[in-house]
Image (cartoon, rainbow, N blue to C red; front, side, top):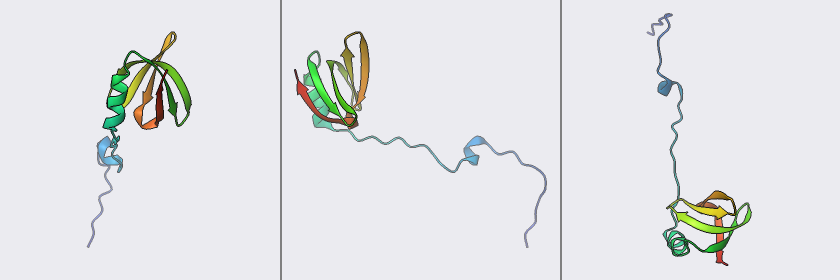
Length: 86
């Protein structure tokens, strides 16, 4: 038999959501290495959203930091289609 308790119980926020956030990213070591060799050089990156031109400032396993005239842009490496040094 089942018994029911009509009194409210406290539930922690982690118990209310059945979903757990899990970050997954793929690393392309060959592209990361190629981008690291181009630090300080002007490049044209073709991304899934279009082309972007700038000077590579820094490269991390998941993104590249570009200097665009007076601003900087962070581009996810997973979004890069090809790279061309200028």
